[in-house]
Length: 447
Image (cartoon, rainbow, N blue to C red; front, side, top):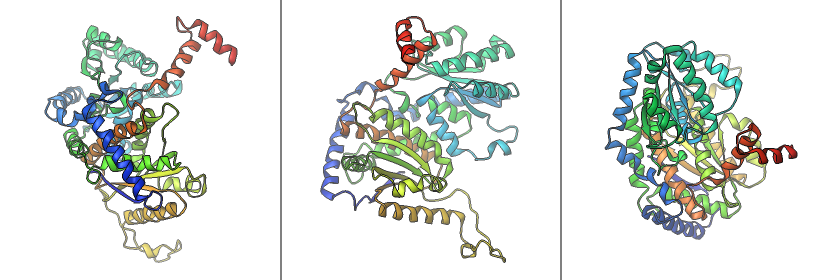
């Protein structure tokens, strides 16, 4: 469960202003629940936790896992970009042992690696170095099958699998997560006989972590997807309540918009555990792509403390006062380690003897909170009990629901992304795509 603490904002936002934003958030929630707002044909994510738990989707993904396990597959390349990979990457980073590669034993879940999220030739060459050493399979995620980055990566991986294992066996090692009925990838999957999972038309990429886009890689990696969906279900129920005091999504959306109205234009998502670094990457797409349009929107950034206190801490403490922080606090560590007494005490840290390392982390978090508030940076605190599948599912859904509410409060369509097309058109023209000749000539004249 996600709990919200707004105590770090009291000195920045008047109670009347916060209450006014709560009323706006409740009105936005009503629009979202009644599906009467902009982008209402992309609201299929709202009931994914309850619908998926009642379906056989997780079991279907587990069947793929078991079939690939019988082939001793020890490496799965997941191909996708943006919302087609960030949620799964976040989950795997959060739930995995941070040194799993060094400790890995045979017989465990396959290693999951990602491709199609960049156009780096070095990255692809080095990925192929790995693929050639392992027993590999592939999950390719794309509604259309024509998005450049994943399409290029899939061409290369598909050719390798077919050359190495033969077309028939390669078809058993490729799963496509794609459109139900149309698109290049769907057509290829039908032609070659790939196992497929559907991305429904009413779920946008950045809201798709609780669809097969995220579920299949998470299951293949050996994690409990049912527990994640149960955590998301709790938030689905809680975040639907028209209540400013009991709905955490209302509280978060209302306060961040109240701060935005006061000139806090940049929101920094803060974690104090490196396992949550990619939560920030997933969150940045969710909010940046949903709110950043029509000349509006809070700019999303992320840091991981205490690490980034030694790099970004100076600016956050003393730089331009356009910042707000949202801190994801983890109440309990999953592991335990005490700091021991050192007879020489050359570092002067014997006052920490007998304390848990996590207690030091917690006091760093508290000390930083007070320092940043004193420095003019308001802080919203979000807390979860521990890092596990249940709480990660709760975080995913909480942020999605709050994002929809916040976008409607801002007056934008939270579910489109018209601004991402400009670079693609320029890239196609510069690469010589047929039909873009005139644009290519105009662009080269500017370079």
